[in-house]
Length: 101
Image (cartoon, rainbow, N blue to C red; front, side, top):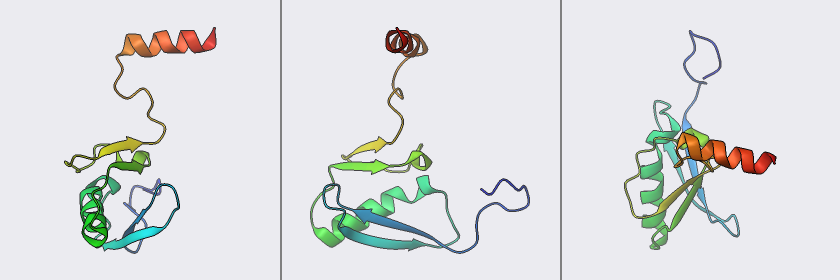
């Protein structure tokens, strides 16, 4: 969102680009109508990449916009900047103290 109440999202359409992890080679590009949220486009993008390449996806690296995504497959979804996502509050505090000491 642009920070304005009256404007929900930017104009245009949303595109998803799937690239390889090591070489950055573009595997697939898909266009999504009606400008859906990032988290609602992941499953379709991964399915399209697997269909076009014939190779199952093992890891998916995405940004924080994909939190709460709709993907239900066997591949591991890695969200950037979310190291402490599965930790309890107490464990996060312990790690923070350890880091700062």
